[in-house]
Amino acid sequence: LQRCLDGVLLRTRYTRYELLIAVNPNQSAEINDWLGTLRNAKVQVLHADRPLDQVALYNAASQQAQGEYLVLLATDSEV
Image (cartoon, rainbow, N blue to C red; front, side):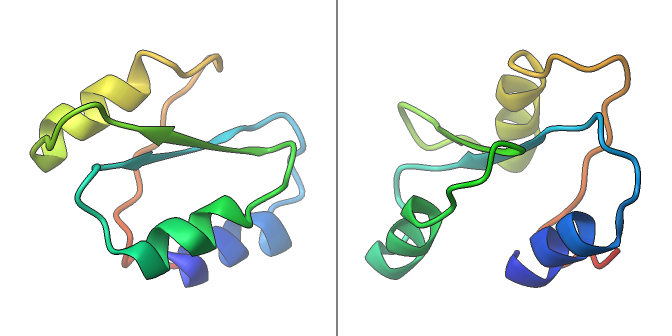
């Protein structure tokens, strides 16, 4: 996830975007700590109330998206 996030933040010249990171509540403490360090106006971490499968997690996050287009990236994607 960090590689994917860094790729978008460092290699994207387009400035009108937001990054929504959808997180299940059963993530490890280490991942939750790292997500808590993300202090970027472009990045928003969305925590699900209950464990969701990947598709339900994407759907929950997409409802929070404000942009005209929605691009879904898996955690192992690289820009």
